[in-house]
Image (cartoon, rainbow, N blue to C red; front, side, top):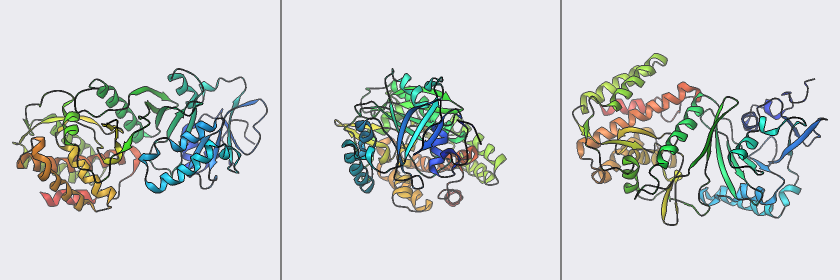
Length: 419
């Protein structure tokens, strides 16, 4: 039999479902012992307890126990940003948690224990993060969903009163480590333009750390009164320009040919061709982009990278933007507008890539002049954005996240038909 702290067959971390995936990410150190509705080994100290809701086999939440306010906050915080059905379930559970019902309910209880002589901060991520937050007990909650190589476990940290203290994204494979690192870098840069007129408010990066081979970004909580942007709201064009320009005047347009943006697309397409047969099609698409639009001069700037209604909200009349993990510099201004149109079609309405690409064209034609895009620039932005999106799909797949079936190979087909 394995000794205390070892992962045994009945250990949650040995499971292949979402609960196994989350517990491996959050409690990966083998000196940690996990028990469910069972005593911990002799010589060990329980340092945290969680309600596994609704059951081990159908787990959706790990809710912290020990503070009814923190338990309730894990369910109620930012509930207004969630879909209506999810909001209703979480609201009902949150009210029950606030009354102490969850702690007394027949949910399985996960006990997290460490050897009595061991400092919990050596092995527990939540303890390490509470130190980054200035000390004091932090209650960590975590949602559970099916394992996905593109998803990141996220710890929500609350104090005893239920006040949010921070949100920690955990990058656990090559793909997600790159995304967490990119978001941390973006938040540091965006903090330098805080308060610039028109720029959306953005949560601050509180800490960035490497933990047991994982990349972790600890981000400031959103304002408690934030409300989501309606999914049918018109695009936030002034904010898009503010993000692109980072508080600076408009940049002088430069030709696509010779730009570092085109150089990057070319290099990434060539790397894709070395790892996947479809990459040769990307190489051809980039070459055709250069042939058709090389002489077109366009303004280059930053982009959020995942500018969609579900990553935006409003608080005190101000736009708030989060999830900057795909942000980057030196792309044609208008990419965020194209992405907003593409994702509303693809994700919200479940339309195929070809329809989403047509939505990009329509939005650029409708709004592009307000971003300084004449017809030639609009065509460049649309064509370049679609190639950028396929290369993003390849980067994630190459880093272990698998192919997005909605975009591959369908998006390459769409790109080739546009040429």
